[in-house]
Image (tube, rainbow, N blue to C red; front, side, top):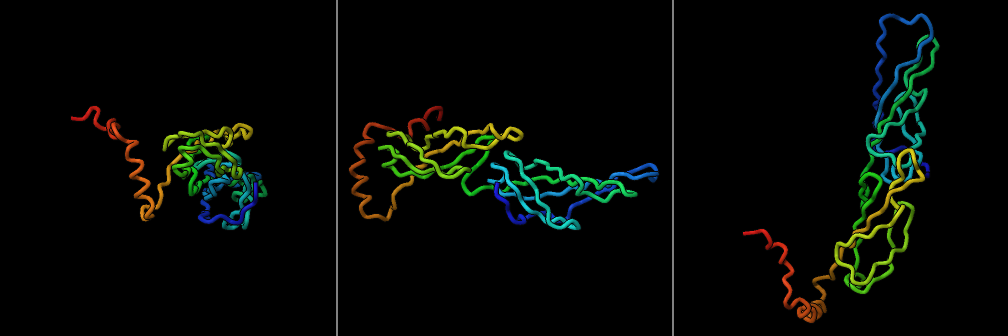
Length: 212
């Protein structure tokens, strides 16, 4: 994955706590561990990557994000905790991830969802359109006669499974009809031509079932 500059929202106030000991160690001992939180981009969590963070007292550190990480994932940076006692090794730094939301992708486990705006002709007549994925745009075929709200699946275009990057979820694309501009003077005439298509059909019939 691509390297990114220091992430906004990173908590530089990394808290550390010394391990309690009944007595002072007679020899070298490992330093206390430290904990902190970093905010990362959605796609870095999905695909994996590397980010640079500023840690108080330790400067800039490079953190490798494993593919499939999510909010709450903990990453261990060995030797980046408190100094050891009497020349012992440093403790470790544990970072908890917080994933920023994406403008149009949403995540559920290893699957992603996307609301894709489409035109009425694309729904009715079918079309091949470009769809964004975490790996870049791909071409998807909309079958003719698709209903508004229909969901199409792109296999393997979801999130890598944490610890098994070769396994990926799917991307579910929901078709959302984008209506023409109501201010367009041509629209009224077109809609009057469509009115006969609704004759004898109650589009709200399902709302009347089970109601008084």
